[in-house]
Image 1 (tube, rainbow, N blue to C red):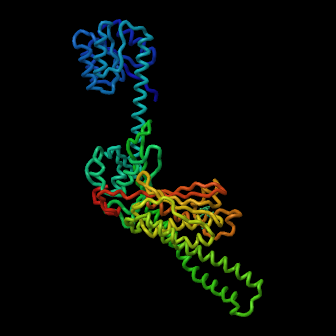
Image 2 (cartoon, protein in one colour):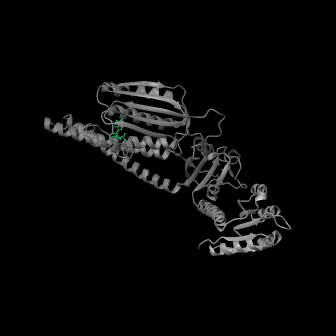
Image 3 (spheres, helix red, strand yellow):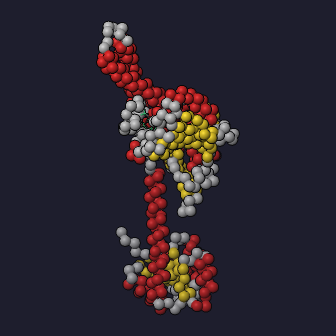
Amino acid sequence: MTFVPRILIVDDEKRIRSGCVKMLTEDGFSATSAETAEAGLAIIKKEHFDIILLDLMMSGMSGLDALVQLRMLHPDTVVIVITGYATLEYSIEAMKRGAFDFIPKPFSPEDLRRVVQKAVEYIRTLQDIATESSRMRVLINHLSDGVLAVDSQKKIVLANPAVLKLTGYEGSAVIGRQLSDVVTCPDLISSLDQALGMPLEEFREIRGELNGLAVDSGEGTVIGVRCVPFRDRLGRTLGAVLVLHDITALKKIDQLKSHFVSMVAHEIRSPMNTVLAQIHILMDGLAGNVSEKQKEILGRCAEKVTSLAEMTTQLLDLAKIESGLTTGEREKLNLSELLLQQLSFHQDQAAHKKISLSAGPIARNLLVMANPYHLREVVANLLSNAIKYTPDGGCVIVSAIERNSYACIRVSDTGFGISSEDLKLIFNRFYRVKNENTRFIIGTGLGLSIVKSIVEAHQGRVVVESKLGRGSVFSVDLPLLLLEPSPPSAPDLCEKGRL
Ligand code: ADP
């Protein structure tokens, strides 16, 4: 439907009234007129007009007084005041009282067209904004995902019904209230804090998972959390948006899959160890003489069975880690100590290849809230990979510094490096780079996917930079534990009726 603006002309000069009505009607508008302010007000009480052309100097009620009443009755109507030359100061006063524009008498049809066209464009823009924001409101209110937005002062500016349902909130309106008055779940607050505190040169999504939010949410409910800052044209952070998604069903399927994988891995591990033991009996000649050729064949069999056994162990590890990622106990952990322990633990593996494994700068007391078993797994995987994929005599350095409330661990090596095509894939399960350098290196392709799952479950991120033939740098960033009076740490300690 095309929009035909409705225009009212209020002027005590008949010539102006009829001239305007005629011209505007010819231009396709719907135009009506009134000869006094009182008559004009009476009309607009009954009908709505998009634009009103209002003479300021009329007998009876003045245009200025009429303008005030008109703005009260229809704040969205655009008022253009008609003034004589002598009443320019009135027109300025009228603008202060909410008039959109003014047109001095005498005016030509062109003058009138220009000013009316400007008003029409303004109305159209307002309508577009209103339509867009109403569409957005309907969309957000009907999303099954919870959406919560706060401003830079952590006041709630948006909370859709789904967010209230997912969190079990039962209180009164939350818009305009301080986040801390409404939300007690420490992990939710921490995600928003991280997004709000993100340096301007950085923009990334903070992800996490929570075990239930509302006290009455069903057993095993898992909520996925994603949070990003929103910024103005100059890049200043205006606030943050948090999206909650119920991923319980996905988690259940994933758990079933992991359960199946671990069952199969468990079932084949012992027969495989038996096969390996039998091969060794044959190789050692305990079941009769074995020729050199047969020994060589048995040796290759043993090698393959060993790598299969290793894969089943890693599959079991993966299943164990994934099932514990959201439920695993977390504690205050000193990363610096963990790194130094792992450095000394891997010295033998490095010495075997004459690789120098050393510590770069490692900041003291890098405290994080994490599961120690899982974090050891992360560091161990990165170190053992760095040693595995670096040729003899190379060099591996581990460092850890504090940056923007994150602990940044770096494991760099002078190894084979990774091509840009492979870089995109190495975090996928079972992906292994196949080339001349890696041909004889045993592995399962599961290590880095384990690293990624663990790091992301700790609201961190892992990135890699690498150049073929030059080496690689794996960086893991983990949010540092803020040393302020901490709220209860378990996500499922949220109070009923609070987000
Ligand atoms: P695996 O080492 O068992 O093959 P990962 O998931 O740990 O599995 O690693 C996936 C692949 O990424 C490896 O096969 C290897 O090709 C490559 N890769 C990992 N770390 C490094 C590294 N430090 N330098 C070069 N390549 C690496």
